[in-house]
Length: 193
Image (cartoon, rainbow, N blue to C red):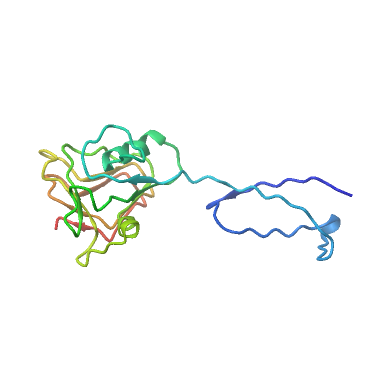
């Protein structure tokens, strides 16, 4: 006979192949008996937020035509929740703040604090444009225009966040400040250089 069954499960990543072994009544498996099984995978991972412009502050909206680092942080904060949000970089070589080696972001005031778990990953810039800075990370966060006392990147209460592969320099305050972001990490960053 024919029986309709459904199963559901959470997946960390919807991409990939999934194999399911169907057991008959009593737990027996038959390699010769055909089964039709539909598997629908629902990802619980929010889509990545992609920084594609160095200007600041931007137009206030993070979208495909323009998303600044400030707007990306604001999008993470507006999304809330407990899911890890990914901020990636894909700034084109036509950006006016690209000097042939690095892309420089110069905030005109202090950036908002990251308040929800985020992975800010500068490594994605090299992957996106197939460029490599032989001296370190490709994205520079320069605080020379951010104002008196401004910190660079602030993670505030966003436990489990990661800041990866950025050059952070020129801020009057701390380049990177972790406040209550337990189990957060800073990896591959050049701070104060």
